[in-house]
Image (cartoon, rainbow, N blue to C red; front, side):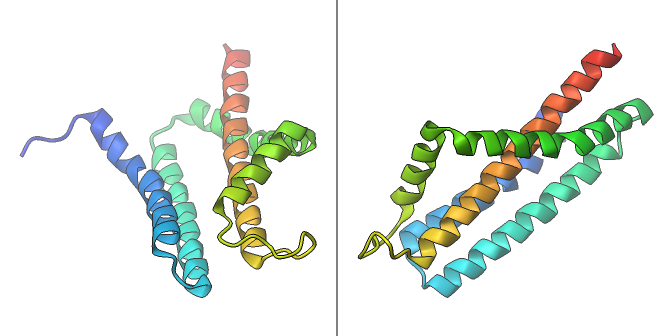
Length: 154
């Protein structure tokens, strides 16, 4: 059997990072499992995703030379604070708050009976979505800082 082209191999390595969250969202929204099952499934998916992402990072870092490793180290140091600062700035903007509220409201199964009462599902989903957005912005911050480092070194 012939070896897959390099680009397809890279796609296959990244595929679990797309399939696991899609399967979790589909299973929770379509299957409507009990809350405890959904919570454990979400925790297992998060642990898998974080472990797999670290494994991919280790795999990529093995092939880098010392200059590329220095750039990755600089991005690792300064990217997350940049992403966190962007997240804090986004929390202040009303359009972002409205979009986040609408996204959380779209996943709520049963609205709260009283405006003051908050369902535990809403809180859990809000924290999860906030964490996902924060990690995504930290990753984008790493890429931007790494690009700035490379352009400054050239």
